[in-house]
Length: 184
Ligand code: AMP
Image (cartoon, rainbow, N blue to C red; front, side, top):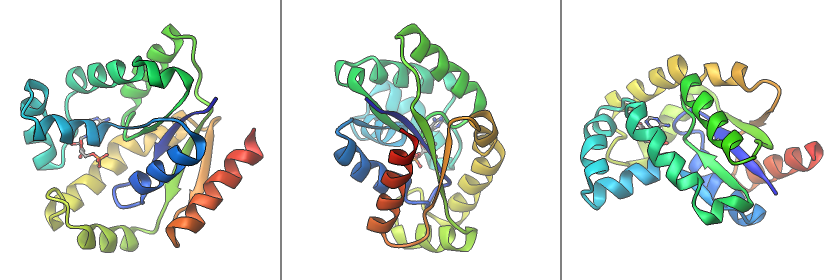
């Protein structure tokens, strides 16, 4: 049983690693960004609320985000473990996650941080070409990461595993799996 939170700046390859790791570990990959994008594509009320924030590179307000994640985490497939990608992104969200887990008798196994040099992040993001990957938005999302999300590294210091995420995808995956095995 493994319950992981993945943390890393935009462009660190967190989403890619999450998808691969969820296969290896046989737990669902729960991505708050993907949940928002699905809602936006399907023009749901939640999607309508979230769209302007994604378009601006800003965080979606907690009232919307926390409830969406709570519902996803309490779906039956998450009872056997999960890999959470993109949530929490702030320390108040981490408190909310702690509450959801406690209510369901769950504990996090570890928090995996993906570390990549800043110039490499910008290079990767410019190459990727997602609609929220314009240069201005990239800069905004990196600033939001530094101010809002980086404090999670202290918050979770007891559970933190830091992975050097500079290098080929398969190598980064191996480093992450190795670090997780060493922990358990
Ligand atoms: P991501 O795919 O993780 O890069 O997320 C894309 C966008 O979705 C972010 O720039 C935010 O606008 C929004 N988002 C994703 N996760 C969260 C979260 N935990 N809290 C607030 N907004 C979020």
